[in-house]
Image 1: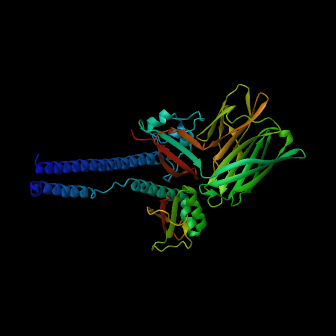
Image 2: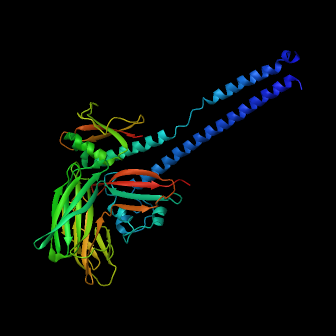
Length: 141
Length: 346
């Protein structure tokens, strides 16, 4: 009977229980570190920039675009990339209207973590047309 | 013992246990975040080192052509207007077959990478495989048929083929193309009186971009015993458009020297007893330099390429961390793939 009446200690256990729940639930507020996403994104961006700049030597990229050689453009990008990298290339005119009438891609996207790099090139022909080339890359999982 | 004391003891134990657990969990999470930040910093750091090696000229800017040891390491061609164009001679000096080659220690010191392993690999954009598929005697000559397979990174590709065949006192050229399956055939006829070692040099140029041009060689015996491995009789070191020839045996005599590219071929002109001028072909193609000669009565045909690609330089990273950075680069208007490998930051 004395034990049943003496319930101050039980209240402490209940208090401690709620305090524990509060403490543990606060841990869920700490965000989990995202390591790999940032790494691969930076490397893919660098790769995309490097490929576009190298392929544009002597105005070759703009020349392919002026001639609408989309298949050759796709082959050029494909030969510069590892097979495990997905790509999609879109060519815009100066009004940001897409001008490639066939998709220049290695297939449908297989990864949400896609990076896009824009590169501006100009035709060396007399019309000096300006093109914006957007190269999207993603790693195939 | 009163019940309140037992309850208080349990309550305290519970709160202390949870507090310890929470602290340990927090420490673990924070450690993971710190590690992640360190990795990000490390990747950024290594990426910048790789970019610097590819895009800087080094000091002196012409350390490739002059044969000096650089005080700072960079592979870029200072005379080029393209960011990712490498110097043909700086690359050549990474090949250990070249007498002007840098040692790993010299390159590492110049790159200020005292505690980071460095590996540099350069490959052609097309891989060419040559196999002898048939041979037959046709009158006073022997006909050889070779299967040439051309692949790019994503698989087989169609390419134009330009081939040169070099044997004792005999030189000819033949061209063909591979189909979309990447396979093509080349047939050459060599007179039977030109017996001895023979060398087939194959250039392949991608149909979609003439800057993607690669070469391969195939040594074989023409009515004779199998040829010795390349560089058995001669050390061939191209630098600054001059080929340095080092005879490895006293009885070696040189008979002919040729330079080949996709579109051109030329005799090598001797500028001294041990050097030949390399012609500066206006061609988006590597140059293959071939020398035929005799060692006593044994004839040989040896070769090197300018730029000397493919090449592997530096650490092999066996059982160690390797951070890889891949670049598409130009060397004399021809595209190549450069792979820079850096070890873990100590």
